[in-house]
Length: 336
Image (cartoon, rainbow, N blue to C red):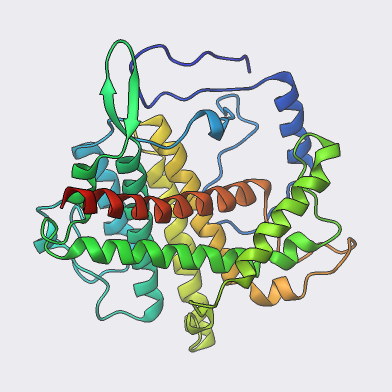
């Protein structure tokens, strides 16, 4: 695949591709050492001639102008098809849609948790877009920054009939879930046989040490969520619920493929897969505890390179959302 230049038009959804020779060699090396297991997200075929590798650092998540009926259709489909709700949910983040919105009341704890996670993901993405909004798009410069009006339209209690604060609580719930998953995954990454395969062998060990430091910090965080309360009932029913959740995430990732904005699709799929990977970890505690310390037999629990990348980047995104909420609180206080 030849290197392509960044689209020189004003399409803010365009992606920047980076397939240098060094990068392609690293990707081939990664694929040789990729661990595969059951997935919570549809994975694109990396061997396909249509497959393109994207540098996330060159393509930050921010406002692209992708909004309106097409964007609402995507989220509508996600809520309608996957949130186990007894009633219809229409445009759950639209200020005028609260009357047709339904929460997860009257459902089992697992289905309520699933709804809250999807709502939290949606709120997190909208926080990113409000924090990196295109404020000035003149011939001379593009200026990105915080759009307080946009943030208030999505989360202000008065403008959302009381729904905004619930969405923000769901955002924090998502943060705790992914933080808990990172802590639970520590034994997997601590194995001597685990390597990151960054493409630079001399840096692999250093990067692993830094990753373990982050995971140790996650483990030291006080326990604010107990995943053992999920799927704790009848064994057969619990197994069915787990499979329902996995299939729902697969469907959500397929819906994300329909997003017309390339950059929105990239970050939407990445964060969806990151959340799915977090749930996969939380559902696999016994398998993780039984991991062999060294190589030999193939472990029952595995994470692919793609799952690891999506998990860490998804947690980076939700962490950024938590930080941006603090920034918006300060900006709103200045307006008073």
